[in-house]
Length: 99
Image (cartoon, rainbow, N blue to C red; front, side, top):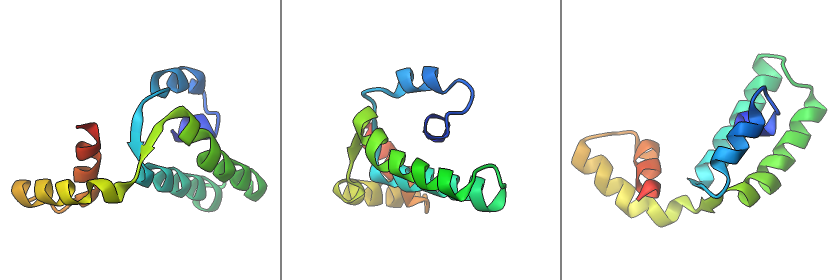
């Protein structure tokens, strides 16, 4: 998703592959974190470009993908995490979303 937002090489193909797919709202936060990293830590993006990219995260990605609320999957994610003895609840949320 970061490739699409920042228009990295090959982003058009990725957009085609993701169109109509599903994700959790947590993914939008993760993409925002990647934009921050590219701006602050790596110096690959200008501040102004990162603000534009964030707008695209909020507007474009929900048009491209079905974005589910994480809270709707929290119960099942916790059940998976407890059963599998996996402390990574975010991973369990992603698995739950895949149904």
